[in-house]
Length: 399
Image (cartoon, rainbow, N blue to C red):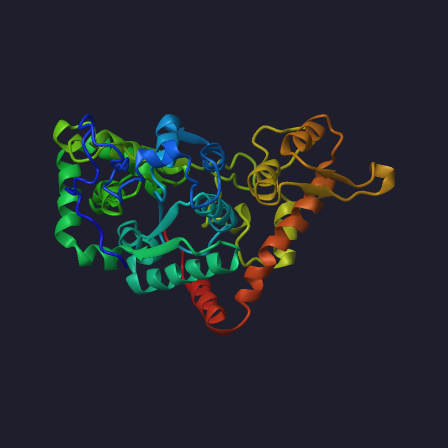
């Protein structure tokens, strides 16, 4: 793994110094291409125009803070860094697997390098797998195997294990953590408890007070320009931007990290805002068998004509159309015959007007999801992946 510049690296030039072509990263990543290149009309390595790259990257986020900063980043930096951190905490559901692969592929297509922070120490702090690091490592290996099989283009993707990377540069990392911690009140840090799947009022061991300061530090330690995590991680990403409001810290970094938050996929049951690994029937898991997918989708909440908080429509929009760009509904002629939707909005409109029945929609969703999951099932049907999955399934999921 390439050595990383220290946070003090002035490649992230302070604002107002007048140096052309300075890096626009929040965290001292590699310097951007000189502004003269853009003026001369030189083609980006991806072959895409700035407008095309901005449209693709922006499409990932339910929210982007800030859009103007994202456009400037893509204009000035030929290969910015995006990151997501994940706790190895059990079997992978479809939002972590398929949706993450879709988002990563969009970013790398636009020349962005994607860094996965395998947050093994964080999982231990959050008591995942009972805090057993050996089990956590096995789950991390399983998750990487899933992405290999799920269609993620790994050419411009790097996996970094937190324990390993922190121990390479402990002084740099822990100085960051301590500085972030001393500049924020306990009350401010506790507001970030939702990043661990907990409420600020929950009874928490002190280890989980440490967690948000560490996650905030990760952004700077990894030299990330873009925080590409879910909406549930928004509060700690905002903490990182607030950290740069301190005058002495702002001098070290030219711009704040950009937050590009993808939507949270709903659980399959009524009133489930998000999927839960502790409730197997609330989500489709990446190696679920075809009959399991069928059973879960058939029983999912999907009342006729109801588009609000409908998980089946959520799957259509964020998984099927997001990946395939279209969706085929197969029906008997008596029920209107086959129809292929080229846009999610058209499907939603027909469902709202009850021109599309939930039964027909669910059959199409089952078929589309099973087609996406089939390569993953095959990958885990033999050899080391099969052994790995057996181990992970044997582990008790802890909160």
